[in-house]
Image 1 (cartoon, rainbow, N blue to C red):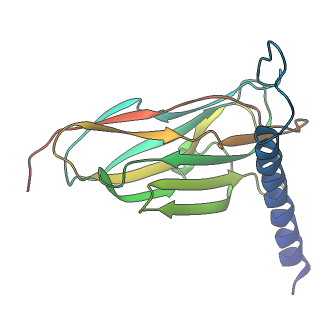
Image 2 (cartoon, rainbow, N blue to C red):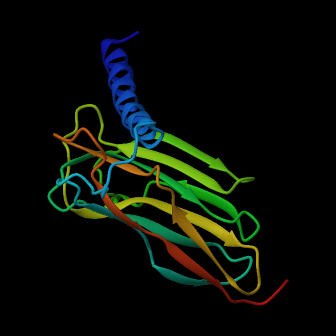
Length: 194
């Protein structure tokens, strides 16, 4: 096996291990059996400045017509290395759901690497992780990390695509997720039935 391929595999394994460690350590803290503290307040770590949003915040979509939304990032002063998004949607309201990297001119990470991509069409869950390549540098600023496409299955009403609490963002010099907030999207249905 060429040394470059072995190095790439090793680096991707290290990045995935780091994401897994962060995810598991945050779950361990949530399930802690320590007694509650008086006036305990949960606050993000001071360096948490990164926000995620699904844009547009409200979308009107026609039944049986393909639509899309972007997952955008604003890092503030954080230097981000990877993002793992966990999203839920109603599988009875949205069909043909897919997630992919955004167009090159909108992609936040240059030459990004997809670390994880799963869509559970029965439960309506999307898991997607993307990060810098092994030889890449952490990045700050704004841009898109994914595009979600779907086909509305309903004629009227509304639904949402929502971030789960397990969504996280890794950054340089941070031992915990630097995600400050995440904003969902609402999809309004409008169209002619088939």
